[in-house]
Amino acid sequence: MQVLGADFTFPHSVQRLPAKLSDFEGLEINSFVTNDGVRLSYWEAGRGQPLIFVPGWSANGAEYINVMYLLSKNYRVIVLDPRNQGLSQRVEYGTRISRYSMDLKELGDHLQLGSANYVGWSMGASVLWGYIDLFGTDEMRKVVFVDEPISIYSHDDWSEQERLEAGGTTTSAERMVAGFTEQGPLNSLITDMKPLERSQLKDSPAFLNSEAFASTFIKNDPGAMGRCFSIM
Image (cartoon, rainbow, N blue to C red):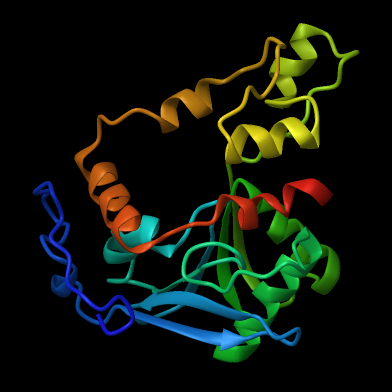
């Protein structure tokens, strides 16, 4: 891989998944420049109907390596690294959902997709809602939303049941930034933390492979990533 500068051997042998990065034929990492001057990277493989993944906060295309390998047999799979994440440029501006949605629109225009299928995970789901708000659905074939809470914040006057049903995990933007960039406490309320707890489990060899791959080649900047939380 020219962009990454080295091959990679996955630590666990998993049936139907590549043993080495070089076994993933046709995988490309390219980039384009947005209309506000930010270079964004995207991962691409396969042929067929375009299927675009929009990662959540702090995530990137490297973490989708298994999904890309499997789905690229039937789709043209594309994963966008959002600004300040993955291999994309670190900047101090444009860190708001509407701008991320514009970045997604510009990716489609850059690739001349016409129409595509979209999958948004966590914050990526919010980016898709922003896209729909700004540009409608004419260029969307199908849309999938994954793991998006009703409200990322739990209000002080909510009952315990309201907190659990909404899925909020923190009480303020400041706590959210500190929690994810400095490992500070998210809140002192009773909320449903099972999704976060599940994400910390290391019981899947395929997950361990993608995490090892991502941690080897992707060096995230917590401060840069935290900028979007301060204005969400």
